[in-house]
Length: 214
Image (cartoon, rainbow, N blue to C red; front, side, top):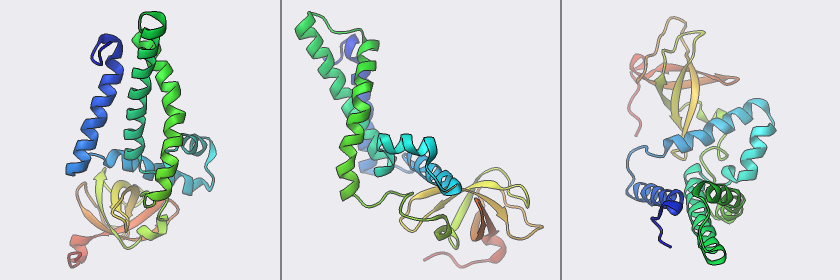
């Protein structure tokens, strides 16, 4: 039985993807993992809005996603999915004389990898710094600088913006101009000056001529 055989291909791909992600993280290439981080941020923003985890929060808690940054969870999941999959195929080959169909083996590996990942990340969550979303509240983002990432921000029509908390972790928030007549475009840097519910209000730094952050 070889790792790159057709019946092992889903697990070989998962293992290869895990290695690529780990390498990119080690060399620190740009914002490769911002999507994973923002997933956590958006989840926690929704939880803050409702005041309770609800079904979505219960699922993410069960999976262990909230215990560590999403990137760490993903790497652990890919590693366990690949390892369990290779093990299943090796066992099937030894006992039955042939490995399972790749789709069947993938389903079995998925069923095993999800709870295994949840268990595996629990000790990591206790020794790692708190992740980017549970460590801060929304009010702590007031006074920080954000960048408009999607849409045009007008009074009554907020745009999506990216802001980093005191730990350097990214969050996506909705931002309206603080001044009624102001308009902020994609790429504009804004200072978040207040929050009402889930909407932040900001002032374009170019208008205020603020000094650069040290």
